[in-house]
Length: 406
Image 1 (cartoon, rainbow, N blue to C red):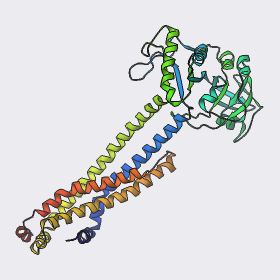
Image 2 (image 1 turned 90 degrees about the vertical axis):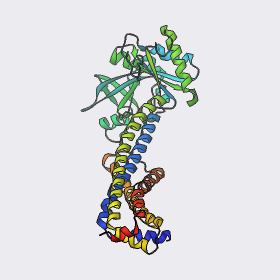
Image 3 (image 1 turned 90 degrees about the horizontal axis):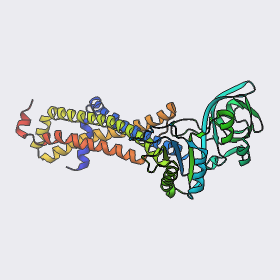
Image 4 (image 1 turned 180 degrees about the horizontal axis):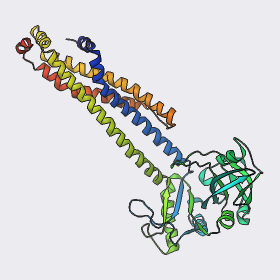
């Protein structure tokens, strides 16, 4: 019997029990749909995290006060030994592959303009901070070294702050705002950066000279972190080792384990974020796998019932010349047709769910050809695996006993 004839016979048999066939493949539909949606959301999330990490800047390293314990948790943050402005200067002077270094301090405060106010973060940085972060100025200009030396009361507004205090799309360069009752002149508006890898709005911030924030707003001397830009991607790890060595020597401590500071690269941050995404992906994949397993078991059960119901039919076919492999092929094709139909419906369901998630939650999704092929392949494998046993049972029936079956 040709494969085409077997396929027609299988479709005719399945069509006799449309509702049962639909319910049988429903488990496969749900399983494949879950696989497609899981892969789409997972890949979209990874792409978003990578884009957000890239928004930190090009080849950026971050130095934190505090050492690192096992598992990556800093255990001495806020200890007596702190990072200082001099540490940033020494990194810039002694490490040739470090093209720029800027200390940073951050405080939260309410800012005012006329009757409007907004609570945001004020960050004290060097003028080279924008170059480290690859952050453009949308309007106006950056503050200068002269502003840094004189602790000038000037600032740059993030797009979110500008919109909240002056209105959507406004250009308030030259206007004044008050931070802790001190007047600050706006000299620039920062281009929009969006969210960072932790989901925080990077545009909800104000940049001011490091000395201004330290002397006029905080009254401290220590830096909360130091941002460093490496000359190239290939030099990032080398710069990291040199920072550990230079700052360790300043403190009379050598080796990462004994240092009272921690150096993080974009790769480190990306690995941590991707590890979380991967753990979530494994969880979702497990759920999808269980759904496929349940769907496969449903196909096997229904096919076993079908073999029992059609025992006499099988006996007649064998009596008129059908071989065991013809019967096996018929029932195997029926199982594969069920699973493939469920797989195609599951692919459509998964794509629909992915884009529905984007519309309702705003989460990024990315439906790839690989995920579609994987879903279709899984459904075919389920049909072959779970359809083999019922098909073999049908092929091994004794024709005489099958003809006597009532």
